[in-house]
Length: 260
Ligand code: F6R
Image (cartoon, rainbow, N blue to C red):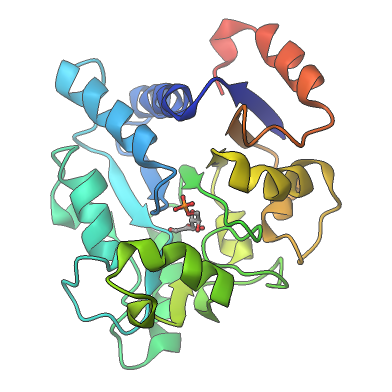
């Protein structure tokens, strides 16, 4: 696992956008897995700026959702489908047919989950998966004690996650209790995992993810099992890392051609 400590969220967004730009030069039709929430917005902004400046061609890129609320009506502005269309697909100038996600309004939720895992595999698998992290260590919506081998399935959100996400809704009662999320086993199949964490509130979860044992109690710690995982953190989110100086030293001395 590579840990990169950056000055702030904007610098994290720039670094990851550079990584995505490099991927799109090597593989123009790469499948990018995208998370929602506040953390990845600087990545999407930085990538959009590169596309608009003409330094990267994302016209053949494909986008895959990581998770989705269950029970929000289609087209609800806070569904993750709407969110990814608004924050990623449209700014990059892509069309809806370059975008895939699980069907959170399906009557047969289990079948929708299985169909999504199948669709991801048929699309050739995710090339680079962007991840955020919950204050409780979740990735996607794999809450604590999710199986490290789990596949895409329905999960119940913890109350902490509902409280954390209430800011996107008028009140907490509107935050769904259930989500469809790519499983940890599904996420680990992506070729490159890139987790961005910013702010003091993520420091404990980051320390446990990077320096703690691999444990279902901290779902993000499963990144330790992946051969190409990059954790990008700002100074505040890095504040509880014992090996922070080592991570800084390693990145400062990394050959530039390696990228992330
Ligand atoms: C949402 C997702 C979640 C978020 C996490 C952090 O698609 O994957 O794991 O990344 O809840 O959310 P923010 O970034 O809003 O703190």
